[in-house]
Amino acid sequence: MKLLTILGVAVGGSLIAVIIMFVVKGMDSKQGEAAGLVNQRLSACSPKPNCVSSEAGTPNDKKVAPFAISDGQTEQAWMHLQAMISAQGGQLTATGEGYLAATFTSSLFGFVDDLEARLDAQNNVIQIRSASRVGTSDFGANRTRVELLRQRYVAQP
Image 1 (cartoon, one colour):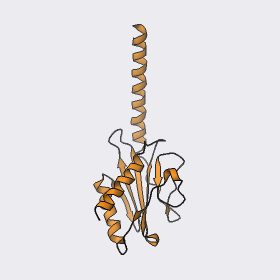
Image 2 (cartoon, rainbow, N blue to C red):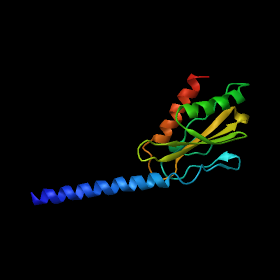
Image 3 (cartoon, rainbow, N blue to C red):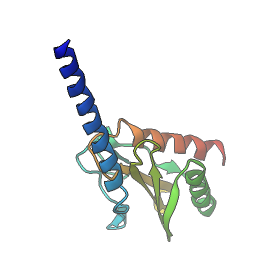
Image 4 (cartoon, one colour):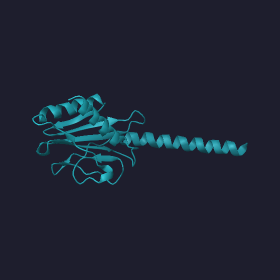
């Protein structure tokens, strides 16, 4: 019985420590901002598996497709994307000439992820990037976010 009590206290203490760590990481993720443009392109993903991007040169395991723009619909597509980001729960933090940034906050622990988009009129697409601010793995959250956003973007032209 004594061993079970000791084991229970150890497991409980470890669980509390993990929860505290996640709360602290969630608070840490509220600091900072989107990476922004580098040489007129979205920043490259870090080696961590918590980022996806459509920019050329992105490794296959982080690659997502850009969002297509119908001929002559550039401005409408750009505004539509912003509306779909808001509808999905994102908060637009920067909108400029052909660039936007938004944040998404997880309901559990409040982790903040950055989503960025770049209007690539030359190729008739919108380039997209979504990345976690802290941690290593995102359990596929950024890829899922981009694909859900794509579904909304395509479904409601």
